[in-house]
Length: 380
Image 1 (tube, rainbow, N blue to C red):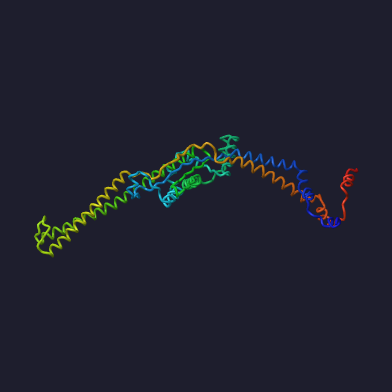
Image 2 (spheres, rainbow, N blue to C red):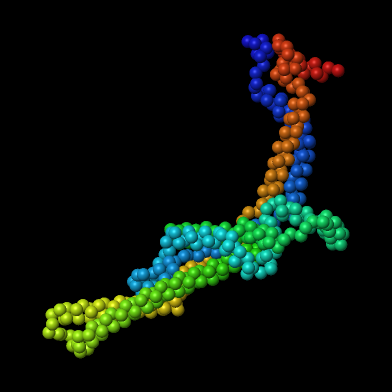
């Protein structure tokens, strides 16, 4: 059995230790050097990265006032929750580039300058390296080098800059909604605390303004429609009244007379008089509707209510600097281990029976006892 084992060496714990742990132990200084080097590089790069902050504003969306038909709801002053479709439509509008463009128009310079900075790690690290070079070389020399590098390059068009700002503002704003309860949340993210509050506040202001205009426009459209119906009802009423007057004149019926001696004439008179009454009643209904829409137009309000105002964030969402340092530490360790094992594999170091069998292509017929092999190695 022993000879069979030597003819066909098996993979066991001792073989694994000699193949992997022993070379790592022998070259632990190399592994430590690579690990420390990569951690130092990652630590240096992490100094150029700023933590990200967030400011959140929460709204509850009610049904537009012009859609409320129930008098009971209006009398009890209980706001009616908006439908799921309306809440989702409002949330999608907040995510659109057109809405971001309206926000961009009223942003102060401090927020626009913040938007010009990319939040991704590559851009932050690149900007940090450039600032370090600027401080090391000096302002004058740095500007000279920068002008030489940019010589011949075309200036970026204002339209391209605006598109980039719009792209950045959409990336920095996230909108979430809970349509079942009518909740909409706007979250602004940035590496600058003050800019997060400004961005969230401006989104809130633009939404309030647009919501008011939408409500006014819809109420105005309803008023114009009801006024058109009122005008038609008035014309129908005057036309019915004119027919009645003409019929009375034709047959010489006094205006205050409601009964005639001719049955056919009486029937036609009653029909015309009924038409006048119906037209008058229709006009009165439309006049009342016009009055109600006029009252709504004068008292139109926003149907979005802020329940949580944007505030200055106290702590960052996530300190990505620690993550970069951990990646550098683990990456250096894995790279050091990989390089040591690869070098050992390429050199073809013989460490166990399997290595001997693979190298000489000859079966192993036996092995020296450990005590004897140790004594032989100590012999000079």
